Length: 321
Length: 182
Picture 1 (cartoon, each protein chain N blue to C red):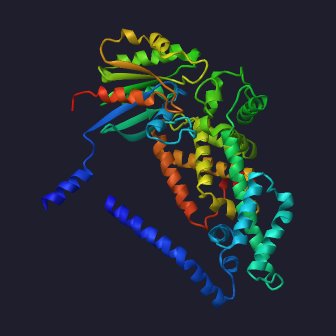
Picture 2: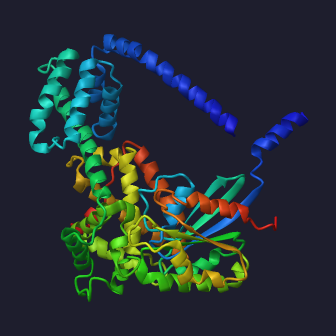
Picture 3: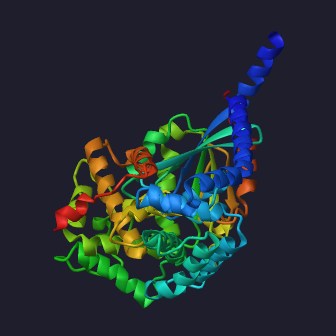
């Protein structure tokens, strides 16, 4: 088994090296035969959304042209300085697009649709990168019970999920009703920090019927589970899918939205809703089956995300209208 | 031919001994962080354990199958389902959680009375020693009444699961106190 894996690795490495050397020749050949540069071929040939944007990103990242590399690092810098924001997209992207048009010798008058679709790809790629930063920042912010803002958010979550019942105290067994582990939720957010809380609040705010439906499932006498704790584990899944790039399929195929924190929250809601469905359908004996079903669910999601054509039409949204 | 077979056998042969380690303790004690630390994984992204986690770790020529069971009160009744064939019991205590010292003591006392865990060696990790409010291991030992234990070997080890301090020392004790049944 190990030998086979080693062999696979060697073949893979050889193939990558070969590709690295052959790429310029293949590109040159296609350029001469099609009269189009690679970016044009992608923007004209690939389906808008995940497929096109991923390929544009790959092409830019593999480019050995100095100007292209500079554009990439310029945009990355804007992201890390948090200056890549929608109102100034034109201002930011126009110069970069102009450089690409110049070095690729593309006449915008002859290729007006290229500019539009290329711009859209750039927006998606760097919005995704900004989102990564934003999500990481929220995750790294530990829930702090001395912080009034954090405390207010926690209380808000309760009032959203259980509007008819008042909390008797800040530290109370009641928290277990919405699936925290003990009397005080503050230690339950762990490594997901504020991100876990924000995810739950968004779910309860934007999809009140769905979240209360899911919460009621979690209180089922036989198939019940701990709502908030499971929710925080779903946050972890969403976070990893975003980080390793799997979530690009979801983010880039969302036509009306650019990747931003709300879209991440929506992704989370989708995952939580679908997980709940799978959990109930699995008829688990008890909560100890969680890790198995969680893994099974993650594999199913990953399979779906691996198909660039996947569109996550959230049933949740339909429910809500 | 024989040579090749031997090589194959060696390649496939698992370490000499396989051990079952059971990680228990209240919620937020640090069991999952400890598990990740043992497996040399990232400890910054831990989530509360719904159910259980399991990992196999190679250590000093032993294959350690470590079972990390959720510590929430609701889950504790299921702890018993994992007792069978346990070689070492590892009990994790959050030394800064003064309010629940009694609760953690009670849970441990119940574990030690269980028939299925009779004679199983006990390692207590006195975790979160990096926190200013953490009680020292000696005080934890007293609270838990460890010195009254007569029917098994035990050890208490101060540790900081998040950065690994003291974790290795505990595992060395574990490897030295492997039951001789196999």
